[in-house]
Each structure stands twice: as structure tokens, then as C-alpha cells.
Length: 286
Image (cartoon, rainbow, N blue to C red; front, side):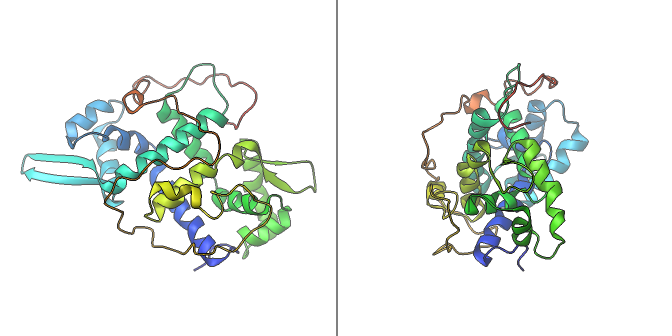
């Protein structure tokens, strides 16, 4: 059933990406997935990497990620159980890398540097705001649009002024801008820069290779002056079998931005309490 006024295939694409975001955004999920980016480990090994999580917090998180198909539990014997990423879980790691790269380029930079994990967590908080994916989708497609027209597409069954709270939140976050009261809304440079992130999320959610992200009919194209038909882009169930081959890095449609982190650096700041730094002006707000 459609949840927006977008074409059915586009509506399904937005729904898949929204589901994927809500799967990985809950607190600690990213840290657990990255802690498992190694050969399968015992529960105690995972717990030692995440000392700020009590067993009562860690075990339910691992179980939910197993249910989501991102982690697999292997019982070798009654007293020997290991946990590791599934193939689908491993294919999510390049998506997290794309999110970290976007954060490094577009988020406000605090006085004290943050780990890649914290960059990803801050970005996911912005992208899972209420109605955020659908609003960003429409603004990417239409270039600019009035609040009333945006409401007709994003919340076709609701009263049109209900679009203002999520729209103002995205403006406060720095992802959407407008020239003033009564003027149309458009993506900020940071919002427009989400193309690679949403393209990667869309491909992962549809079970497609990551190198197809640049072919996405909306987020992979440079010209966004008008909404076009989805062409051969068709709806897929959210949990299709994934290809057996490891996906290649996504093709960049903009100048390459190399993240300043490597897998071995992800936990460089993980165990310390996170400070609340003073933020500098400019960039998308955290």
C-alpha cells in the first residue's frame, strides 16, 4: 500500500530506505555491527569491545540484529557459540562508510574530533527524522517546491499544514533551505550531498550491488530539474537474497571524497565518554 503520493515504484524505494535506516539507527547497533567486522566471535569477546554496554543491554541488541538478518549465531556445541556478520550485514559496511564520508564533508565540525562511529550515529539521527526520507526525495526530484505541494506528495491523506513540523526540523538540521516565508523549499548543499548515501542505502535495501548506486534514477543523476518516470526501476521486497560476490565500491558521481578512517580506526574513541563540544558555524547541524 502506498504511503506517499509518489509513483508506486518510487514510494516502495522510499519505504525500503526508511526501513533500512530504522533497522540500523537504534542506539549501539552501528557499534555492534562494526565490532563484528572480524571472524566470528564469542559473546564475551564482543562484550569486551563494548565495555559501556551491560549484558542486559547487549544481548537483546544482538538478538534483534540476528532477527534482522544482519548477524548470525552459530552454535558449535552447548558451551561454544559464536556471532558474526551475515553476508547482508557485511554488505552494509560500505553504506556506513558512505555515511561517515558525508558526515566528514557536510556536518558541523566540533572542536574535538569525533570517531567515525559517532559521525555515523549523528548522521543517522538526522536521516530518521519524521518524514525526512520522503521530503528529501521530493526536493531532490523537484528541485524546489512549496509547502502545500510538498504536503500533497508526502502526506496525501493528512492536512497539508502537518508538513511544517518535519520541514522546520530539516531546516533546523541544515538539510533544507528556503528564501523566506511563502517561498519554495529546496535542498541545502548538505542535503543535496546525500545522493551517494541514499543511492547506497537504496541498493543495499533492494539487494543490489553497491556499484549500481550511481545508476539510481534519482540519487544517481546530476540533473534534478524535473521528476522523471522511474523507467526500469522496479519495486523489490526488502529482504531479497543478496549476490554471492562481495560488492564493489560504489561509483562516485561527484569528486571523490576519501574518508579519513580505516576499519582499524573505528573504535579509537569508542570507550571514552562523549563530550558535548561547542560547535562551529556552518555545515549541517548535529
